[in-house]
Image (cartoon, rainbow, N blue to C red; front, side, top):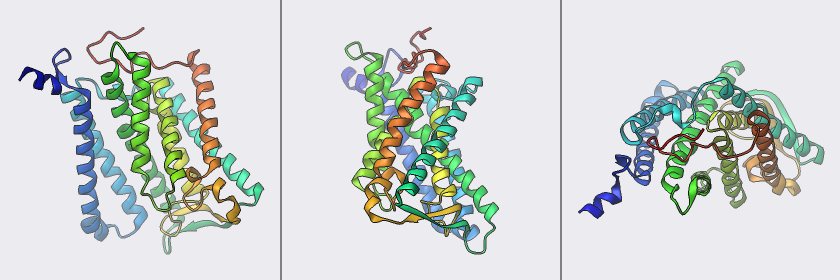
Length: 320
């Protein structure tokens, strides 16, 4: 009986073991998501027939549910404060957020310029919006929806699981460094697989999204905060979908430009019709993103190393 109890319960920390805490969190997240999908097909569609407005409300509702879930598991299962998942909103947090926003924007701008220069894409329109809908309102709805999704996904796929996985694998034979690396690889693999059934997804797009997830995670584990990955995630999705209009269905939302494939010979590089994540230019952008993230962390913190307390449980002494 004692051995079975130890399989579920960590008596030294007086809480469920990390794997079970993560399982509870993901099962609850899935249940909330499924409930919201059922609601979309009934009440939300009738009340908000316009996709953009409904999308913003759905994203906000799901973020609220995830926020409540994180608060609950943080206080009841993890025995820690919710800010310890990467929300210490100090001055440095906002600087990291700004860097993430700039990084995502500049990486996509570089991809766009290269694709135009090579003749792989063309601009087919500007100031596009859903039929009968004001452009400004559609852009605002898109901005809100992407922001909510970026925050929610960074909490769900980076903040909560990496923190708990790193703690769980932080054993004497592994150590905090390798424990964090293992946590990053597991969460990134799952994140890529979760996007493998997206419209127009390919093997390369799935692999690239796993690499992208590692980049998000690097911003988290090197700073100990979710600011940088949230900024990068938001900027990448919003600029690609609502500035360049290469994803997301411009006819149902809005975009400042509408970009289309001009030469199929460049498909391997552009990733279209999936988006930049589906091409080799996206791969290169992610590699450059790693280098720039490391440079930023070194500039701001003096060295590039894992955040010292990331893999420590609340009952362990904090590193200086």
